Image (cartoon, rainbow, N blue to C red; front, side, top):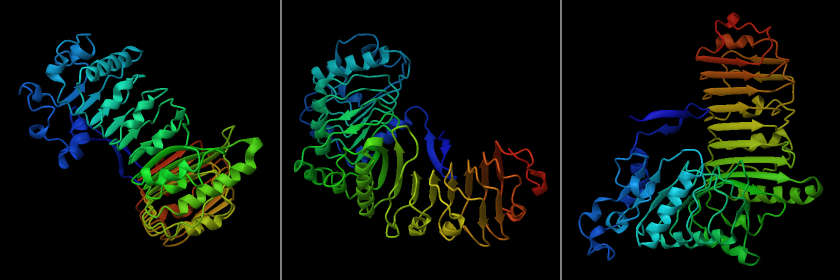
Length: 447
């Protein structure tokens, strides 16, 4: 049965936990809908015995009963063509520690491809397999649409990967890949996930070749985990990608090149302003020591599709908050260092369901929630606002609030009296708060 694994701050489901087999089926749904393979018309399979056609999906679960277990893990490489000519999807669930899982997968893939097997493969998902070295002959998988390498801690990709012209999704989250070859930007990708925890430096073709990025990646919709420093080609490069729906950027400033980085931040702001289809934006800015640094943003009023916004870094002022679109559903601010009460600016966002005011997002002493403010807000988080002393909640404010979480606000000695009038509240979480706080006054036991 399908289970909820994790929820978003606004209460919506973020991830599901699938039973065995369902993950595999979902990855192939797109393929089946678009009829991306036709066994009867495939010249490669016309003369193949019907027994071979029975295996179209391989899911390695370390089960010795599976026919492929001995081929992948038992070093039995005989009769590969008997089983793997018609395979469309290969998924591994081998999350064991050590080098053996990666070696097993690498050897199997290399031998299969060398034996003209797996050439019809559409989906290759190795999530969680420790450092599976991709063979150079992966370039022969010309029909591959999805390559998942998340949580593999892989350190490099073969240069031949750029020849996979039909590849639509490349997932490199939680890998150690530090550099992407410039040819990656000539592919026809729609979704590119890079590693946020170990930044991937992007090598672009030299100008004027960089201008071609927009034409080759014109269908790119997801670009997540992008690392930008003073050397990244933003203007005349990345800003050619104008069809992005989901964008995650981590900017890093070096102390000796701050002026150059300011120019880059402005270029990033100009690029974001052009993304009229943008639905989700995560923008972080830090210096080389990991401290929050400046963020530059232009008006987002016209971004009518933008629903999720996450900003980590120092904003130039509170006025940009008034330029957020009414479509926003989820908003997170961190290290913004706002001096003006953000509640007074954000209160009328009609669709806002989740608001997180995290560390140093506000450096003032008083928050005020006016009557009838935040009509749709379900989830509110107030974390590490060290200067905050008082919070006023007027009657009929926050009429839809269900979850409230307050953490590490050392100068906030009491909960707002108006909280007793928030009848919709179901859950109150307090952590690292002064002992003087009396939750029973509001008839709400803390969790």
